[in-house]
Amino acid sequence: MSLLILGIESSCDETGVALVRTPEGAGLPQLLSHALHSQIEMHRAYGGVVPELASRDHIRRVLPLTQRVLDDAGCALDEVDVVAFTRGPGLAGALLVGAGAACAMAAALDKPVLGIHHLEGHLLSPFLSADPPEFPFVALLVSGGHTQLMRVDGVGRYAILGETIDDAAGEAFDKSAKLLGLPYPGGPELARLAQGGDEQAFKLPRPLLHSGDLDFSFAGLKTAVLTQAKKLGDELDARKADLAASTQAAIVEVLVKKTLAALKQTGMKRVVVAGGVGANKMLREQLDAACARRQIRVHYPELHLCTDNGAMIAMAAAMRLQAGREAAQKSYAFDVKPRWPLDSLA
Ligand code: KG4
Ligand code: ZN
Image 1 (cartoon, helix red, strand yellow):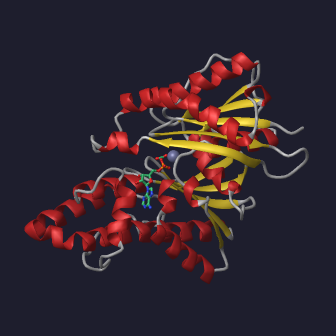
Image 2: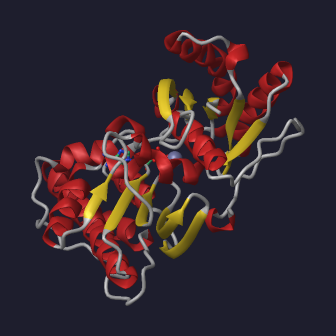
Image 3: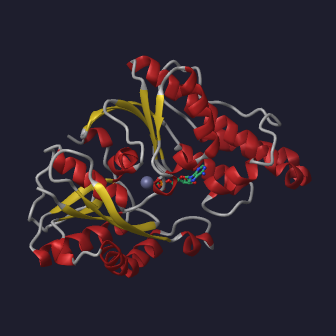
């Protein structure tokens, strides 16, 4: 039976809503429409996400965005079969908005509701691309809050191979960018500045590069960037692009080398990159080149679906239902899980 699934994402600073339809028989669900409101402009004045402002803005956006995706897809609200929302991890107040809206809509429609793991959304987002992967694969999940290498054997079958012991890769980008005086969110800004810089200008640490395991550590990098920036003093402005390029090169080298090590360890020939940092051009180029030499396929989400969005939540819900991992419930008492390990999913 074909299902029309509405997905709502509100875990951090983006309100995303999307509609996905599962096919009658086997096959991948199709994205019908999606809409996004980014709060970047609102938070920029504060240099980072202000949780209370985030929650209030999600409240303002979620229903108009829902109406927009229904209009774009030419569907009526009462045609929706399942309402999915991000249950965690993320900011508690922000998550509660999506959860509340989803459960209220589902209750009003007398339809089932389904809470989705945000990182599972990222992980499965490449299935929305024109070149979808096949299971099994290694996944490099690199977002603002998480950096993990996973072994993915199917929907809901996730094993963590390695993860960061302190800052996430996105955090390393964001914090280094802040030290360089760049606006929030720092990742894309630092990447842009790095384009005009010399990546070999400064020797920055590659933490845990030779640790022999698949864990990451990025906290020391921002300290090294700070030390270097202080050392430059008045010269910093003139050398900013070089320092940005050197920082990006350090982060990307660690991500690429550890991903190759995970592929070697598992013997897998396929890797999926997901999460906001997956939009980084240098990471894509270096990983593509390294994997091409080893006959390994690399899959990414479409560029605009790398950062948070509703499509990945609707897609994860659709794939969980298809895989029989989930029976959506007509139970509207909801909770959210601000902390929620991905490998605890079944
Ligand atoms: O997945 P995401 O949208 O949100 C979380 O779930 O955390 O990831 C956001 C992160 C931020 O740290 C942002 O700076 C980073 O992804 N990011 C980038 C780029 N685009 C987004 N980092 C480096 N280069 C980019 N082009
Ligand atoms: Zn995310």
